[in-house]
Image 1 (tube, chains in turn orange, red):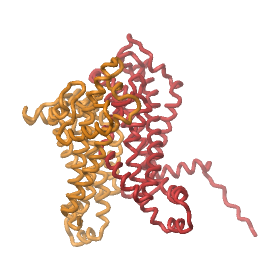
Image 2 (tube, chains in turn orange, blue):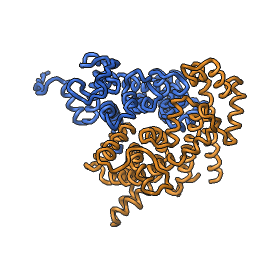
Image 3 (cartoon, chains in turn red, brown):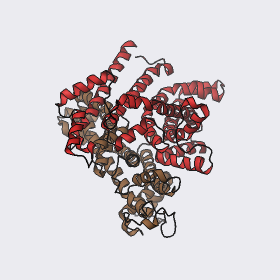
Image 4 (spheres, helix red, strand yellow):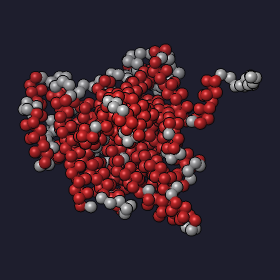
Length: 313
Length: 292
């Protein structure tokens, strides 16, 4: 077990090193002078030179990369070109809204999608099943921001049930916080739910055709007990895997969702950074999100044994 | 020898019969294919579909709701939204098809070689793992932040995000195909590596890649819209569905139709491609069809 954990951790470090190398070398690989692109069309030669110096583009690649990684390992993600503030500070200010949004979405999505997938599998071939599958294809096809505007149009503007945009911190109370996050969570979670429900259904169908399920049914267990205790638990590995992989959808979607709902999170920070071409911020956000994604999937890997004790590491 | 004369088939042309047969077995896929065909025609025939120049400004006609004159209304610069949406289909379809074609070509080449050559496999797959751990929107954003906005760069950025997934798929296929007896036979017969890959492995990857291609096309169209929507995609002067919606960001409370129409077209097109992909998957792998 420990050997396995160490080996997986090593693999994770390698992946993160690849991410860091990629994000850093993009500055060099992209055609043209990134400093000129960042500086914009109205920049003077002086401005471009200043940005070159700031990004450290005047030094040899390896010296720059070494220095950058060294600072990175000390928790320094560099400074923003536009605001001159450390990137870690800027991200730190924006963590709460993004964590609130993604965690709430994750919880809602899993609580809805897994049961839906189980029911679809139990009723495979019926209209219920077809409805679930049809809705999931639809969910894959409507972009998150289109869905977001539809939800705002219906629930905020037409029915006036929920606020149109904005964010309230948790310290303002549970309802103000929650009411500002309900629509964003639904918009963000829809694709994720479709993804989880589909895989849950497929995994359940696989398990439901096993002999031990027939035995459980034959000895007269309640169908619900067979579905949950016998089938769902054995379908756990693919389901937890897809929940982990789907985090990438949540991260990508959060950037867009925060823009539509004017939530001052890391996604908004990223979008503002694009408009100002503030590359250090984008670099920092990519490293952070990729790190979170890789770590979550490492935990997912390690959790397999909870579902299937036969798995040996 | 007597020749039996078979009764002439009652139905019309064989094409029609084939179509009816296919429709009965994969109704959604056929509907998807038809919607997609209509969209492609729309994109090709845009100038002849009652459109005006999508860039013509008419400040007096600003923000007019849909009417007989302007079917989808006008935007904040008085441009005809119907024309912009129709022309916008060109961008989405171009990006979707180009990304699907490029990422499959590149992914196939890398996947074939890495799947077959063991020492290369370890290195290339670590790189792919790294790329895959960057959420695709962020990967594309990083590239777009460092290059000038253009449709070509959007295609490049999305392709880069999609390639690792194709490599994964192809590599997996190659790893199982290389153990097949007919590959052993080819090796024993002294066939060289390139020929084994091209003649014996490649043809078996076509079906899954065709299906994967449709999904890539669908996700590329969504990604293009997302990038344009957040200002990191197609240059603002080109009418793409994402751009039309991006411009309406601050106006959606008073002019929701600016988001509704491009959003509807985009969703419908992506849905069509997805349905086509699902149908192809079912047709090419009936065993999987029951489960997915």
